[in-house]
Image (cartoon, rainbow, N blue to C red; front, side):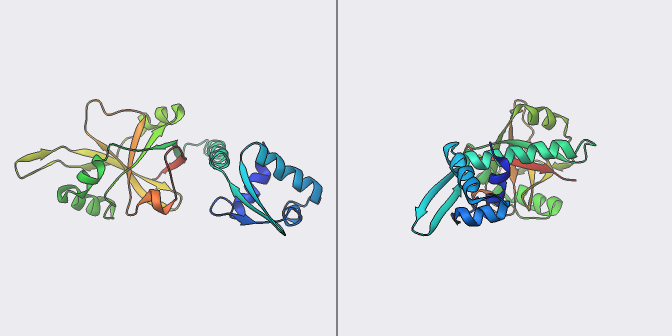
Length: 215
């Protein structure tokens, strides 16, 4: 896999929207001959890391989901390399659809006021659910939640307590929220944030997501 060429396309914006780019222009960005640049694009397409639509005077290039996943893995690997002192912790996994309970519970005033007070934001009514990979499951178990969320009673119904810790996805800060349940799964995290993360980051089920744990 030619990660250098894939990374250059991402830096040019092909991971966000189709990029109009000729092989001559791509060659100039990589300081290569036009023939070599064209071969690299063809190889990336054959590996299903990019898709191309040919135009009369160029082509539209988009990085596919497989390409995005490859870039996420590269990010994770570099994070591992440069965070040997443990100062940076990254939880990685695939986006899944939750049970839909998050919207109801997060909207309850008894929880919302605590999130606003303790986290500094009013959360979007819903959670981003991520199924962690094996390495991240082990890391998750070592993270101690630093923020407590108290339970409360509303209209004769009792709502349980929980805990959370701060995280960042791209440039958006949020928190992993963990209800106090005896059998809460180790491989799933639920993230709250002041915005709809799926829409803001254009995320869909199956996408790889890297979550940075912050203090």
